[in-house]
Every structure is written in structure tokens, then in C-alpha cells.
Image (cartoon, rainbow, N blue to C red; front, side, top):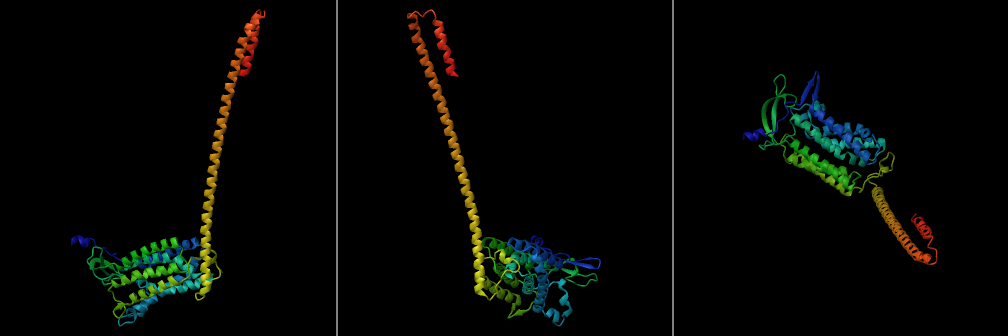
Length: 402
């Protein structure tokens, strides 16, 4: 049992640090870090798809504020008793630093802000959503770390080795303050770290989205739909593990209903939306973009994108084939040159051998002629000058050797 307790995950001793009068809240820092990562990575993905540099940051100026407001409104609407109940405080609605952002409200109203930004800068919203889908989900994973520091969004009590210890926190006056206080090391309970389960699930879906996007070249908002569907699928089961206070419908948490409904809507969009991916020309400001209900024009737009992609692949394949043919021709030329050089060398060698043999045959014939001439010269009375005749004949032999 002792070993099991030692394996529990400890919570941070506090989630707020003060620099003079300025409070630094881990939850807010995680949200800001997630937004920065989403904008940076989304910008890279947008440019890789052919979009204009700077477009993601321009649209984010609209989408981020709308998303924060939407997330807060969803949280307040689904947990209204915390703000408008018997012991509620309506003024706490603006205290966003205390946590409480509903992802579905953030995506919905953030999408409205992104649509406004896209209309202003004249770029297609579905393509922008595809570029931002993995970065947004990664930002959500980073934001879940803020729940860890706030000791919130955990599940039921458990005794599993990876259970999370929840500490009691107290403020400077000794009053219990689980959110803003500091831990005394006293463990209140051990629970399922459901925020950690969701974080891990989000990262896995991010990796899957990137691989699907590379392999199948998804566009026209369909990758964004996969992001929404993947997140909702995991969130549905995470919600079943939580037992904190929440609004319920027929005994089921409202977030479970939302997850199921949004999941089905995302799958429907993925199935019926335009196939293929937008070309770089279609991402430029001012490019013609049909309205969502203009199905014929949307299909034509998707077909144009697919044809452009096929041409790109064909051109790439053609370039590769031309390079292979060129290399083959070069190899054949080298082989022919080598063979020609070998034949030339062989012919030259044969000619030299033949010339040497002819020279030797002539020398032999000359020697036989001299031998036959000397006796005749003696017999005819020319014996007095034999050396002269021999010298004359022998003197001619070296001239043939040269």
C-alpha cells in the first residue's frame, strides 16, 4: 500500500504567484502559451498550403477575443448555478482567470470571429480552419495544464497508482481557498486526473490529423471537422469519469450531450463537404469563393483543386522520368565511348604487331638476298670487293628499322 501511495501524482502547491501587486496565474499563462503556439504553428501550416504570410495573425485578432468570450459564456450557461444560484455571485462571471472555459463555446464564437476576419481579409474560412485544426487542439492540450495548477476538472476518487492528489490550500488569513491559496501538504483526496487523460488524447489526435493531412491532402474544412469529431469522441468518455458539480439532463452531464451532438455534426460535414484541397491560387485574397449553399460551384471548385493536384503530381513524376531517361542516355553514351576507345586501342595494337611482323619478314628476305648474291659475285670475278657489296646491303637494313 505504501508503494502505491508513493506512486500518486502530486498536485502543485499553488497556482498563483505574486510579483508585488501583480498576480501571475498558471492557468492564464497556459492559455496564453497555447494561443501563441497555435498562431505560430498555424502560420507555418498556412504558408505551406500556399497562403499569404501574416494571415493567421490577422484573423487571430478577431478569433481569439471572440473565442474567449464564447468559452466563458458556454461555461456560465452550463454552470449557471455557480453565478446565479442561491450562493452565486454574478460578478464572478468576468473572473476568467479562475478557470471555466467551455471549448465548444470557444470554437463556436471563435469561428464567428474567424469568419469576420476572413471576410475582412478576403481569404477562405474552411481552408484556414484546416491549417489551424492541429494547432488549436495542441493549444487545448497546453491549456489543460492550467487545470492541473488550479486543481480542477478531475474525476472520481480512485486508488489507481496514477491517481492525483488534491491538496487543501489556504490563504494568508488561514481561510480555505482551493484556487488561490497555498498547500499545507494535507491531502484532501486522490482522484482520476481526467484533465491529463484529455491532454494525452488531444496530443494523439494532433499526431493523427497531421498524418492524415499529409497522406490524403484534405481540404475545404474537412480536416477541421475531423479535429472536432476526434476531440468530441474523447471528451464524451472523459465526461463519464467526472463527478464534480455540473448541469445534467435526465441524469447525464450536459457536456456529454454536447459531445455527442457535435460529433455527429462534424462527421456529417466531413462526409458531405467538398473533396480535395484548395490550390494556392484559391487561398489568395479576392479569389472567388462560393457560398456554402452553392453546391454546384463548390463541387466545381473541388474538382479544380483535384485536377491541379493531379497535374502537380504528374509534373513531378514527369520530371523524375526525364531525369531517369537522361541518366540512362548518359550511361549509354559512356558505355559506347568506352567500347569505342577499347576497339580503337585494340586496332592500333593489332596494326603495330602487323607492322613489326612485316618488318621482320623484309629483314629476313634481305638477308637471304645477300647470302645468295655473295657467291655469285665471287664466281663472276667480283670477289675483290665483297666487303663493299656486303656493306652496301647491310647499310640499308637499319634504314628499314627506323
